[in-house]
Image (cartoon, rainbow, N blue to C red):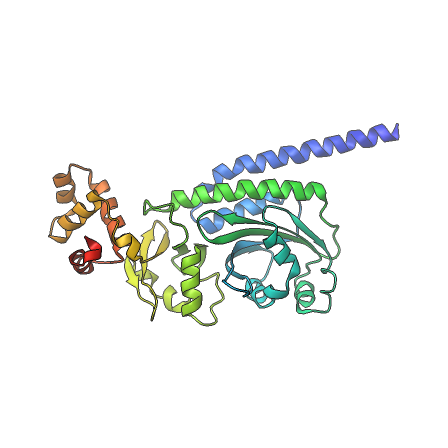
Length: 338
């Protein structure tokens, strides 16, 4: 009799967990109503706590430099963790075996109870002790076309119980759904009509808080600004975001085109490859505009709507790496602009 009751209890619990999981996954489609990508991920991962409980959580993007250099976090968000968490982790990334196993086994939920064997006397152990991380579970995925990895880690303190196999399965499936929906959300937020180019694209708040960053942008900023810890744009760039649209030119580096993107700001690397692939309509719109035509006149001449004319011109500005009409005229006079 007791055995049957136990089985019934387990069945009821499993059903409720599946119902909560289904509710949170279906709810991801509603989150894009949030005003920014940062709040989107925050709301999504907070909701997962209704399926698998946790004390704290950390998520974001990891950049893997070439060679044997340690991984580096370049964008993050968290629940219940201090503002210095990512910076502290970047200092121990090379010896954090739990994180490196997760990076090497994409799509799999990696679990750890207590310190990884042998880590208790290392900087990793001290890091976990400071943040009361005793039980950990993480899933890392490849973000298509970005050159970056996307991860979600959840933690429980020493006084809690560990994550089990059911928790791991639920997290693997949830993070897969989360990554797909997040990419769809970012695509909807983008306004440059070139959503396949994720590697040299970044998105930030107007205060410089990174919400997404591609490998090319991350590599350029990492090389240009010594000591840059990611998560927020370097201070020198953050102070220039209010000037958008504009083109930033880091010393010795490629230009970065900065464009308003609703309540956010997009950043895109200038590329000679793009400067030679203006579509005929974009090139026509750019030439007419550079010759003094207004948006409405460009639209009337080409037989398109003013909104479409603006889109063609915005794309031309991004592809040519310019921020005003004077720069546009100069770019169109160069072989690469033709």
